Image 1 (cartoon, each protein chain N blue to C red):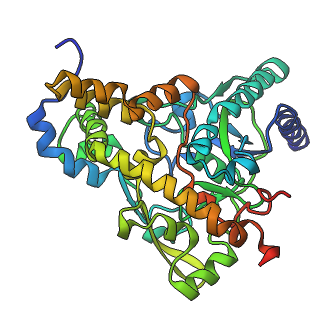
Image 2 (spheres, helix red, strand yellow):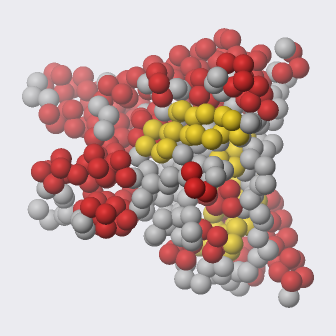
Image 3 (cartoon, helix red, strand yellow):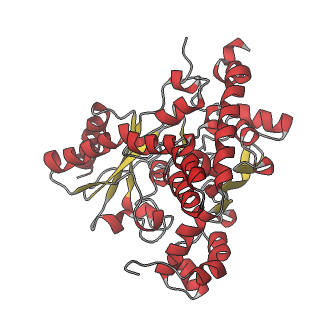
Length: 103
Length: 285
């Protein structure tokens, strides 16, 4: 293969660990949390050092895993979510959030 | 020297506002080092970087926010209006002041990651603070789009806000009353959404954000949907079913979105739509 692609077996072995260590799911990352409580995700280089992998391998696994994590059905749910949230907002919440003087 | 730096800073900010920025701030390049990942620091992009100028603006208009057509706001949320302001500031610094100035591209660099965190830049420049929902919120305007210029020009830096913008007083009241906030209520992780968090004494003490899930909502019709539909089509042995996938509405709108804007489109605003920060600015007659 002419371009760099990760071995699928290697991908399957490490994808969950790499996503867990990365910024994929951010818990208590916010800067305004107390310093000891902040948990920023690791960079690809830091993940590579922790797992004993090459940085390029971690980067590729993370990229693929981030896309692979949710199936196409999640995109359909996204469409429905936005249509419903937008409709609910316009129908019921404009007065609450956009015109406080009218409450 | 200090007076000269202050005068230069004022000139740069004036130039930014004249070129269309709603707000402009300066962060010291070195301030990124302990916070930004290796490879995403100003000095990684421009050797000798001293300052980062951040311009913000180009939010969706008030009318966009109250349209009942979700796809309308999806289409209006784009960085392509603030990007030229960033580039114009870089041109001003190089042509008028004679220092190197690198306009940070709005797209992604290595590994599908930003060249520089514009949210961190905005926060360090005192233009806003991060919210429970994720985006940096400006105290008056709420969510803005940002562009950044890394420069060797020494400038007087601004300071991060001392008091975070989020949670807003009305959100603290809602938390005490209902145990949630507008953004957490509209997209709760516990019900398939992206956000979670907890407030104590008027500040958030826990936050959680499902970045990849948010990606399916923020980029519903973008690179991800293109790849997913293409993968499904390649896996589909039935010719007629392949046609349904490739000619269907998701793939078609995805192609429209990708070709409509050369820059990133943010296609989900539901957590920000209900946010009280900036609501006054978004309220019209």
